[in-house]
Length: 247
Image 1 (tube, rainbow, N blue to C red):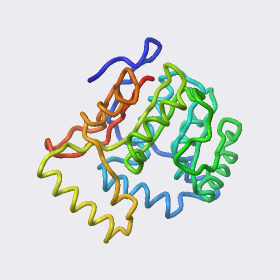
Image 2 (cartoon, rainbow, N blue to C red; image 1 turned 120 degrees about the vertical axis):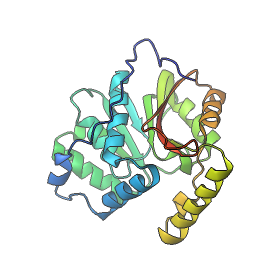
Image 3 (tube, one colour; image 1 turned 30 degrees about the horizontal axis):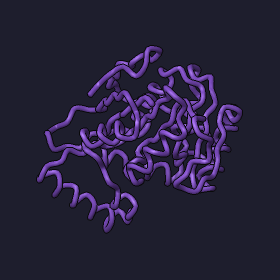
Image 4 (cartoon, rainbow, N blue to C red; image 1 turned 90 degrees about the vertical axis):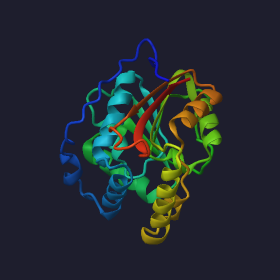
């Protein structure tokens, strides 16, 4: 199902041009360390897409909502947070959360280096409850993290934190349900667990398109847009998609 995400929302026409360079990252004192590089490599292996390019699409989507109070549910590499606050089109405040204090401190240092530390607040958080009052966020963003959480619990917390007419934006892989895909995913899980030594990702639970739509509507959202970021090579291929829902 597709629909407009609100009368004040401008739907972006996605382009598929090569990713733009990220000069500010290479100029940072810490540089892009092995953790950042590892996340980018894993993302490409899992989705077939460039990590920074995919984040750019989410940043564009957030800016097009024209909302000012944005919550980032996972700081991680800090790339989404830094690219959003570095955009001239973003004039609001970003609140970015992570349980890892090392990642948060590195993100803070990078924001200060960019001269944008007043535009973002990084906080350490213990899951599952987000440390924000009810109805606080105008936009809630989760980039490639939804599959690590109990889906219904995540949706319920998103509805609690979002204001009326607020937007939930997920960047996530949607996996078609088919016998062939079931075996392919089993092989991927084994590879992640035993070769990549990444048990958290091996236990990830991916929805198909219809399951995601049902979850979102059941949670109380009223409008959904789903945009795949590449054309599938077969009906069995999981596609990294942008999913935008209006509360």
